[in-house]
Image 1: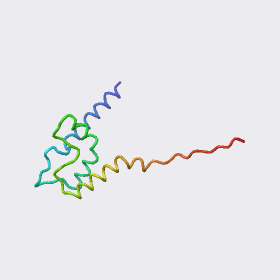
Image 2: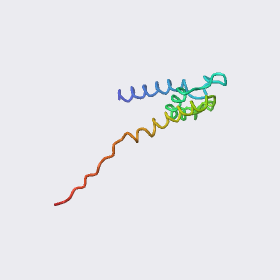
Image 3: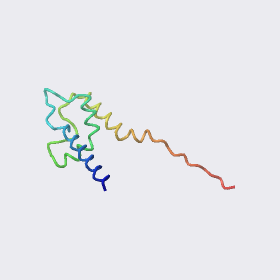
Image 4: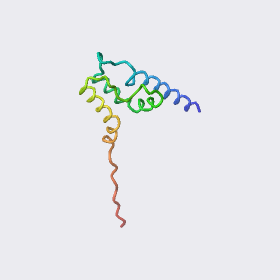
Length: 101
């Protein structure tokens, strides 16, 4: 029971920390657009941003005030490495063909 409570508290703390820097939170503007590294961060937290956007309509999963290609490239790199990268690093299990003698 103690393990479940501590896991819940760690998860809640993680969500709280991640919600402080979601796209659309007002940190970026036309004069101060989001760049490459912000794109990487927003790509990594995209699933959390999606859940958070259900409860707060001002939050999105993509920053509209961005530098263009640099932000898009960082965002796309993070999304692909976070979600698709795991599948690329897994090894295929080889099936053993056994012959019955």
